[in-house]
Image (cartoon, rainbow over all chains, first blue to last red; front, top):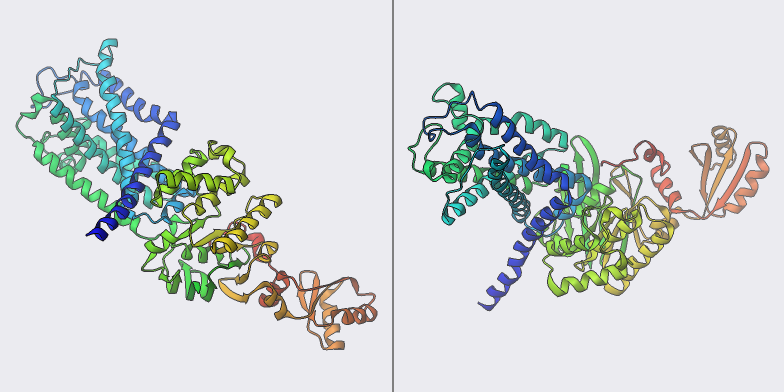
Length: 286
Length: 315
């Protein structure tokens, strides 16, 4: 028994310490690059204000929306997911830089389990995404006072807040793992930017963030198959107590379906990230 | 006691071969140098030994563990210093070392003490709070070595350790490596393309075009050539080579614009040649064979031939 305890005591730090230190480094690097903070938060904020103003007239609120919902209100959860997506992208794109600068091979020859390496990088990206999203959740509603945003009253209980942040964390974790898998397989940041424009941005556009899922047609199928659709819809329900009760529809699935689909998405991307990392690949050496 | 055993190791990047059936052993407690021109395969070998690249064919044992199956144990016991710095340039020297310690399961007061010790040993104490970006190449190199030594590895692998070091810093580095070997019994493997560095190793392996062409102590390797080494510059070296062969029955190697003859009692031959061909010979030098001569004798070509058009090694 004593020896089992001892082995545990030796092994646990060996698993958690690398995760912690990789996360810590991610945060430290982020806050030393001010431009990244501005970029990942500023662009979505500007999108929210500009699209909100520009599309106000042409927006047809979906049937489940409370009466008088403006486009900017509709767009709010979508922009939150956009911030999470952008932060996840920028924190995983650093894998390519780490590889080019040589830092990555130092980590790869360390006795760190590949799972710990993946989890360290992902929790760093997720924490950053949550910090940025939290900033938006505070700044967004404040724009009402300068006439740039709708009146967004927060009516969430502490448990509601916790559930919302928890769910957002899950979405962030899944998206960071997706970005990680992409970055791990690419050898240039240009390649990552290309994938971002043809894959990640459309994925966000077709998630119900920007416009509701139509009732029928090919677009509705693409959007229903998009895992991020359930992330956005789940967040929508968790953000507003009135929407939590609304019956499920194609553009607003049931909360439990949203949670299940997002968990599945998360499991899939994390597994992919772990599998890719486990291979010893020539791309990682220089 | 064997630290590393490489048995029939071959490696290729796609269809470009990098290592061809390499077999050798490294004893514990010695400084072993892998000497070869860029593109010779030493970096590939280094990557396999450091567990970065999978073994494609053959067997490699590091500290009695198979690299293919037991890399986790090996990683805990080896220290690796890369040619390209593996420091995070946005972090300070100390932050980098703390991060490294955590990766190796070190923490708290033990980690702090180790960091202070390595910083002092490598003369980095007053720069520990400086961002890596602000350090000179030489100081970054030292921080890199401090990083590789932090967890007291039994085996230290260094890829071209003196890249970017001035002669003074290079001297200090080698004194430190020798100290590690003799006082702490650390086995050290360095790759190098510098002859003067190879001279300081206890044993050497010469790699050329993916093959191990010679193995031994620097003295043994020089003794294999035997005797002296004559280098002759001439207006028409090919013609002179033919005439020497005709008159004395001595083979000479034609390298660039010069002839090279390895022979015992070289001073006697030198006198004869100068008297026999006063017009043809423009200059002659006589010397004990250097490691470069060993390399030439083993491969039939100069050390730097390939290196010039293959500066940045990818293989």
